[in-house]
Amino acid sequence: MRAVTVTPGVADSLGLDENYPEPAAEEGAVLVEAVAVGICGTDHEIIAGHYGEAPPGERRLVIGHESLGRVLEDPTGALQPGDLVAGIVRHPDPVPCTNCAVGEWDMCRNGRYTEHGIKALPGFARERWRVPPTFAVRLDPALSDVGVLLEPTSVVAKAWDHIERIGHRAEWQPQSVLVTGAGPIGLLAALLASQRGLSVHVLDLATDGPKPELVRALGATYHSQPVNDLDFEPDVVVECTGAPKVVLDVMCKAAPTGIVCLAGVSSGGRTIDFDAGALNRALVLENNVVFGSVNANRRHWDLAAEALAQADRHWLSTLISRRLPVSRYQEAYQPGPDDIKVVLDFAV
Image 1 (cartoon, rainbow, N blue to C red):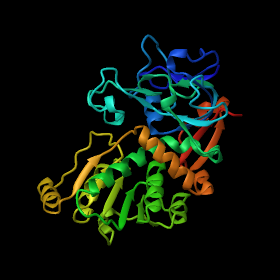
Image 2: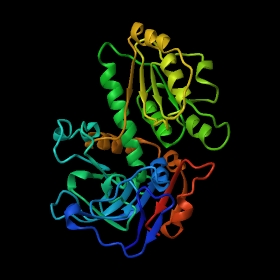
Image 3: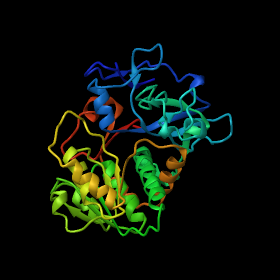
Image 4: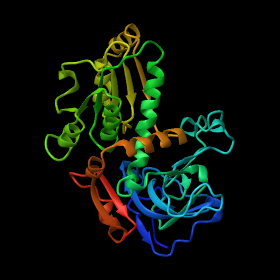
C-alpha cells in the first residue's frame, strides 16, 4: 500500500512508498481505510529534519497525525464497518507516569509517550492504519468532508477545558476573549469561543485573503494592529502564534484575574529587551494566570467531535484551502501563501 514517509533527522527526505507493509495487528484491533490526512507546521518541521522518531527498529517514519478514515473492521464490536473515525495521536508511556495511568497522557510527566507520525509510532499518511478501539474517535457522518479537522480541534478543546478549570478558582464570568493568530488553531480556538457565547476578537497580521472574512463569519472582530493598540483588556487570551513579542504583550494585556493560554510554540533563539519585573508585578497583583497547553486526551477529542458537529459545515470547509491527491504529495507538503489547512486526500 502507499504511504508518505521520511527519514527522521534528514532534511528533505520525504517520499511516497508504494509498497509499505500493511499495518501490523499489534498496532490495534481497529483497521481503518484512510480518507484524508491534514498537514500542519509539525509535519513541515519533521520534513525539515528538525525532529521526528521512527518506530523501534525502523529507519523510515510514516508522517501524518491529523487523520480521517472509515472503519474496515473491529472484532471488538466497539465500532462498525463504515464508521467515520479519527485516530488519537498520542499514546501513554509504558511505565506509566501518574497522569498517563489515568488517561491524561497529554500531561505525561516523563516524556516516554509515543505519537503517530511524530514519535515512535507510524503516522496516518498511509492507505490503511490500525489503532486500539479506545484510540479511535467516531465522528458524525455529516463531517466526512471536514472531519480531518478533529485533531487541531482537540488541541483547542483541551485549551478551553483548562481555561475553564482555572477560571473556576473564583467566581468567573468572562465576557471577552482575544485569540492571537488566525491559522487553523487560532480560527478553531475562536470557533470554540464563539460557541461559548463570548465576545471574540482575533488578531493576525493578514489584512487580505480568507482570514478576516472567516473571523467575521463567526460574528467575531478581526484586528491587524499590534496587541498594545487594542482598546480593551480581554478576560481570556489564547495565544497561537508563538511569536515572542506577541506572547509577552498578551501577558501584559489581559484583564485582572485574566487567563492567558499559550498554545503556540516559539522557535527560540531570539532575545527581547523586556521589563520582567513589571510583568511579574502585574501577574501577581492582578491574580492573572499564564499557562501552556499542548496535545489532548480522549476527553478532549470527544469534546472536539461535539464542537465540530455543532459548527457550520460551510465555515469548516472554508478552512481547508487545498485538497490534493496522494499522487501530488510533494505539492501538498509545500506551504502556499494563502494556505490555512492543506489536506492530502486518500479517497481519490
